Image 1 (cartoon, rainbow, N blue to C red):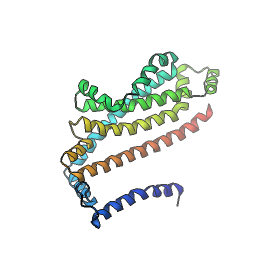
Image 2: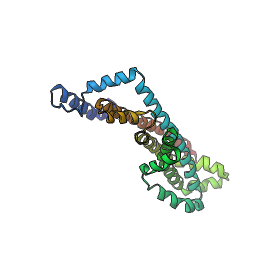
Image 3: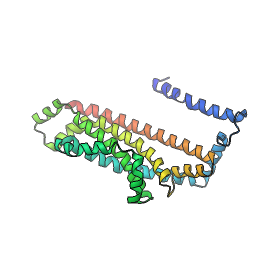
Length: 258
């Protein structure tokens, strides 16, 4: 068996054991607590909510907010990170404030965002964009500042224009750090999606599904929501890793010429 397949198989061992323990707790009567329901009940709830479209509407709304906030926050972070990385003056002017603001807990922005933007989708997207902004801006800045000086000097010997220097030398060399920031932003945005839907309760979404389950003590719905959150997070992380590995392989080939 291939090493990668063997590692993936080992990674499924713990979830399978947990699922088996959960099933056994109800099969053999080890648990009769109303706070924990049987796997079959969660499965039935998933089938019911899928059948009437509730689950798909909630998942679609959450993913749409996640994507909108991730794109807006990443683009803003990318632009600011490039500007700070290229300009010492701008770094001195903006850097201290930026590093101070990033120390503020993300949840602390909720009251301010809810007052300025209300409780609807706009406020949630702003919150998600804020969650995605800081990983991208910091990693883009560090990636640009970490570009080897020798590369820049060689580019200047070939009389590259500033734009050519940025696009053909600086950004390709900074790509590992930039992609690391984008990867983190994708995960943070998804986690923030659930937080926004849980705290800004208007509209529909997986977070609202969890809130409804908690308020009515529908533990099957709560557990279903947790499983979906984990599955979506795992999928996003896997997709980001696969895209990052592929693009960085291209970068390694192309930058060999510099």
